[in-house]
Length: 461
Image (cartoon, rainbow, N blue to C red; front, top):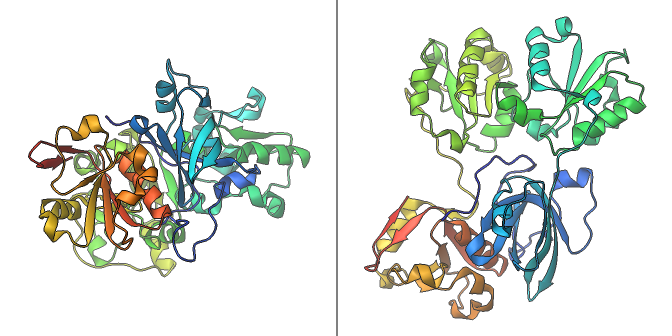
């Protein structure tokens, strides 16, 4: 019954908790993701962000605007969808929209409920073939290096995205700061200059191309597939300080593999030991490819050992695999923290929970307790009647998610009471969570599949 696709976020420029309108002291809710402001102005009655989750049973979807979320209803007979990937039905067209894809929404609002009238999915950038280079050519050039390949490679994405991983030999030249950074372009205006960004729908590298041409560069091109295209077949690189700032400082989980035989004397926090030649064996302990965990491979100097292992992991289908530039030697030289002791032998990766999500363990403890024991919490079942007829958790309040905004009076008046929402997959539960948070409730949600029988017993996957 899942109706949401699981794909990487390509457009978000910040990671963190959801800032809700009902939170004391919160800033006004934005109408656009930060990255969209680079190229667009968003008028009233519109939103620009990335497609997040789809809940067909309740005719609603959610988009993300950086750390914020917006839930929108839609009328199947009235919603217009502009997309290159058309389905046989409206539902099929909506299901074709990838999670993290940039979208523009036009909506009307009544009684605090936003109803989408138009959903425009950002289309691929159109460039002349003479203005582009393909993955094969970029791979050949990177293998040669800038001196032998005689090229200059620039990453047009904002610095936070560059810090999460970039194409080897590239230099960060964020498009919004292009005019301030023209000094890093080569003096030779006939040199091969290549720009890339976040993929086929991203306008930043094409924008950089246009500016470079105006400056007189005659051999400037765009690698249109960008970082997603590169990661589909190759590993990237991350500098020591970039990894610290993008992952450690933000407490973002990543798989760190250390190839050094003396890694026990000092390594990165949470590193896993990787013996030479045993990459394929260690891969058996990895989470499924669909989880898409960030991976960092470390050796002494960022050399052939780390690159070979990283390439093996990338070929196994894992995107977001990177080598630590300069290896552990560069890490130490930067004065960054190291942890001593025996490294783990197996990979254990736990994705960072979505803001507001309750752990399965905590939800289970709450659900198996008697209703009388839940004085500080309420379980709210937001499934539809055709689902709840098979059983509900004992003591749970049932309000179908589409009816929630009009039935808030059915909830306890004490908004400090923790309201934990669940559905069958977690999708509608998250939509309900955001609605409740906007209304000032202390809410959380179960982001998991749950099956409930007539006795109130349940299983969670």
